[in-house]
Image 1 (cartoon, rainbow over the protein chains, first blue to last red):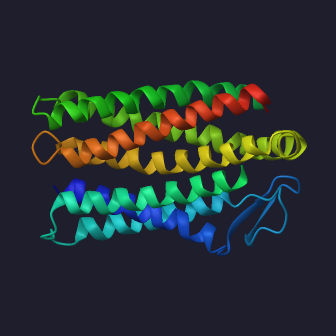
Image 2: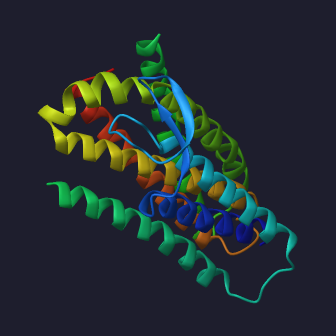
Length: 105
Length: 144
């Protein structure tokens, strides 16, 4: 039970932490594969990559949520509702990225 | 070096796909009331280990893809392939969290409510299959 609640919190936080920095263009770690250098900020040309930075933010959010869920006493929220919430957040990410793909077609 | 990393990424990617699929299948069987504790424990470390290894190799070749494939060719010749590859990267990232989460939670899936574990595991496996198919398509068009 405790493992599942922790995993669901981690997955939900990863989904939020992965989606928000990219959509809001928040400053993250940016890697420039041409200059072979990294900096903290926003993407300024098409070659620069924010994928590493987005992954780091999502991983930190996920680990923080997992640690909090592991430490907190068990909630009364049914596990099915917690699972549905976590998977809905994942579905929100997928719908957003699918909409970008369809918009580009 | 990049070609070797790409081949490693492909092999580890398929290992991750099949391990996650096995975990998902055992999680569903556990949810149906058939004891699967041993299999869930076994694939509960194989799936996360393989997905982490394929993610590391994927992250290592991503800059080469960005410069030698995406910027040099695909953005002009196949912009849809660029968007598909971006979707693949997002699905792979989400699958990473889902597979690790399902493996962690699956350690006790036989004892307690197992359907949420099966849902996490099946979603992660489905994302991995989709990412693998898109990765093969883009690599077939232009590899690093």
